[in-house]
Every structure is written in C-alpha cells, then in structure tokens.
Length: 426
Image (cartoon, rainbow, N blue to C red):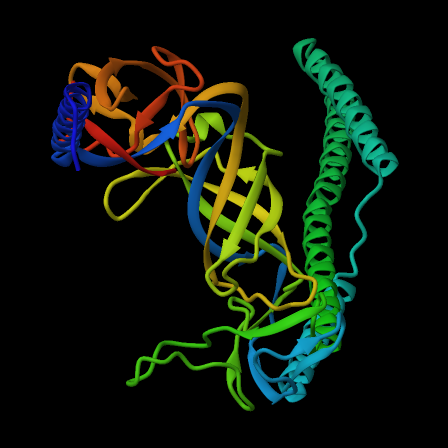
C-alpha cells in the first residue's frame, strides 16, 4: 500500500498518541499498584442508642422457704425435686409422735401452773381495809398519848397513890390497844406478799397457756405445705458427706425450724440479675428499656425494663466496683430455669440526628481523637471531638461533616497523605 505525505503525518501523530496513552496508563497503574486497600464508611446522620451491657444470670423473683413447725423428723416426703406443685399442696409429713408429746408436755405444765395459782388462798387486802387499819392505829396512838400525859401530870403533882395507879393502868391499857392496832396493820401489810405471789403465779399460768396454743398449732402443721405454686427445690439438710454432696430431705431425716428443707420457686416470675460498673450506674435509672438474651436461648431477645438497682456496691474478684441491677423477664411457659447465664443491654439514652461513624474509625492517642478522611484517593488525618457512643457507633460533634468518607481500619499502618484504594463498605 502506498502512503502519501499527509497520510504519513497522520500515522505518526496517531502513533505518538498511542505511546502517550500507554505511558499514562502505565504511570496511573504504577501509582495505584502500591496503594493500600482500606475499608471505609460514610459519616451519616442517625439516632444513636446509648447502651450499657451487663452480664449475669437468672434468679427467682418470687420464692418461699418451707420451714418445719418444730424440731423433729420427716416421716414421709411426698414430692420429688423439680416437681411442680400447687399452692397448699402437701410436700412432706412430720413424725406426729414427737409433736403429740410436745402438746402433752405443754398441757401438763399448764395444769401445774393453774394448781399453783389456786393453792395460794390468801386474799390481797382491799384499800378500804388498809385505810381502816391505819385509822385504828392513829386513834390508838392518840388515846395512848392522852393517858400517858395524864399519868405524867398526876405523877408530877404527887397525887394519891390510888389515882396514880388508876392512871397507870389506863396508860398501859391504851398502849396495849395501840400495839394491837399496829400488829393488825402489820398483818395486812404482810398480806401484800401473798398478792405478789399470786401475780407471779398468774403470769406463769398465762405463759403455760400460750405454750399449749403454740404446741397445738405446731401439731396442726405436721404436714408441710407449699405456700405458693411453683417448682420444689430441695435444700441442703446437713453438712456435706465424703463425696462432697450435701444431704437432702428424705424419709426419716431430722429437721429443725432453723433451716428450710424445701423452697418453692415460681418459675413464671424470674429476674435477670447483673452487675453495673461503677462508671455506668449514674447513667442508669429505674424503668429504662432493656433487652435480655440468655445463653440457653441464643437469638431470643426479651424486652423488659430495669426495676431494681441496689444502692450498695460490691467488689468483683478482680477488684472492680459494681452495683447489682435486676430486670424482670417473662417465662410463662417455664422454659427457663434459675441460674441460667446471659447478657442484658440497657438503653440509657437516644441521641437524635447525630453525625455518626463506626467506632473502629476513631483513633485515640495522647494528642486526642482523630479520624482518617478519604478524599481523592488519599488519607487526611483530622482531629475530631466526639460525643456519645453506642455499641457500634460514635457521635462526632466537631471536625467531620455528614457524607464524608472515613477509613474504618484505624491501625498503625495508616499515615497522613497516604494513597489508598477503598475496599468494602461498612
């Protein structure tokens, strides 16, 4: 083929352009060939739910211990551990012989106390009798004083011996009457001791009567019954044996009112008990919404509210200061049991229209907080000010606008001005 001069120039220009394009492509490809690939996310406006997470376990919200009415032995245990029972259902029967003996002893003591009271036959003198005795003593004393004065006057006047003798006789008679009145008054006073003994005897009899009533009430409670509906738990009934297991209620075992051999737990009324860190307790309050998940039921979320936060702190094994928190959880079908572990998320607050980025995009350093903004294929480090934080996102209140792209991988390999390729979006 033959090419003229003009065609030759066009061919040369086309060839030159091809070379330029090839070189430019090579340069661009080389420029990005060494660029790191980082995942990114856009800062977006959203409502941030501020939450607090606590771990814990299920506990019985409603339970009742069943105590024996007196020390004795169980003649028969009528239920098995874990059995569902109705309120008032019999759980066990006590040996009635011991309870009957207690009733007989109480009644015998009451009869003895009553006999003792009746044996004190003296009557306590009335206030009228005491007043009359005092008046007689006073009158006898006045009569004695008068006869003594008359005798002393006659003696001083050296009266006739016959007159003096008569006056002396009158004085001695008046003195004898005075002493007799005082003796009677003394006898009435000593009768008050009888009254004290009668009062003590009456108190003893009343106490013995109350003991009879208690013994009879215990006898009526010889059958241990469930106070509420629920599941029966057998408690430890003595020290652990050689195998490490604690004995539990069985036929013929000894029991005492100091320890409950049974506990009835209402499984339809459970609570989730966890521990709030001391840094979170000030942000939580009663009535806050919460979601509980149990390890035994993965994926099942139970919505509830905070109903108790104890004011007294405790300390964990690693020294952390925590406050117990409780949330009620539904269990109408009785599928959950006491002691199941799980986690609760408490929704502390909602911040609306917040500029939010993933927590992984935030860089914490001694100089403050910052992010890497991705623009035109390069990283630009920018200082930001943050606000609240949710489980996954953090609010940026200054330094970043909604719609800007940030690098999510905030590792130490990222540098300011670094060329990057964007990878998967978060």
